[in-house]
Image (cartoon, rainbow, N blue to C red; front, side, top):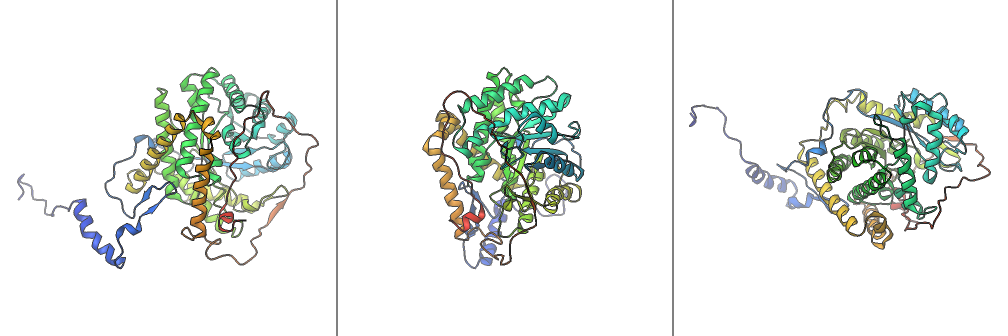
Length: 489
């Protein structure tokens, strides 16, 4: 009998420390004398990834996101990306995507037709949007420095459905990709902020600016660098939206966030959860409490042109990370994307697989039946908290340096990204990170895949996005891929 008069009949469980003391010698015996610490790995930011986690403190509650019941079959928005240069063909492809299971559309626009849909006029935009019911399938778009003009044409074509149009364009991120802006960078930000304020309604926020750091990721940046840049970008855009006339709450509610996800799904899940924690911290600084609207885009740098079929597995892992991490919208690239060029685009099979990867994850794997399934898992909670704390410190450092634009123009920003890229590429070249089909089990067959030929004549004239005043310049960040990392030129 126990002191309380109750006989449990079972011995008390040993404490976690006692369990570890019992387990450690057995584990080291299996390691043939190596220390257990030899299994500890590090992220690109030097954060430890332990082989075993016990009783770590839970991350900030905001990391869990919205825990209210979701549609079990459609827990997130499956968004199909369209970039074919011909407006008529682009329209056919977006309708194909929606008929094939997508719930919304993202348009990648390039007036010259080199890297997106060649929209040169309001009529071209109307052609792209022909027969698209925006009340059923919302639309996002991105057009570089031409985004304000494209948004105006799209909203004109949409009429009373204009509030269903948003943008995934980030002027700061595009600046990092190009190294220069046509006119002052802050002028481009303020132009979009004014468009947002003018389009804002009490019932539906206009989301015509997006805070993301896609280029930081694609240039080899780390998870902490990407998260900190997203947060600093959101802070910068919020200030301009307030300057344009919105309240802090309306300004923050007008900002979608976008993040890249790759095949490292544990870090991907932790990154999304950490982003929500960081967003809660930013909103708290403005005295508001808003959920983080997150759009994930599959990483380009993880995809290989040498072993295309293996990309299907990488994209599946990225989609898993986005779904389990709680993304609101997910864009998954076709597995043949590394072979895309101005004259060749992914074939119907690759487009269908990109959609079906998400459909299977939602409707057959039932990834949406549990909100934040990673919550309470010690490993994920620890990664979430470590990423959030490191990114918040980096964000504060950016602000101390004079803000994001000033920091980007300093040599320190580009050097820190370059250092992470060097570390990432070196790990691949040394085979510390093994890439199937690239560094191990190399594909000896022809990696070419069936592609769709594109016959398109570039427009005779170019649209100008130049604003009055001097151009803003920074060190452009060159994108990297696993192929380039393994086989440097």
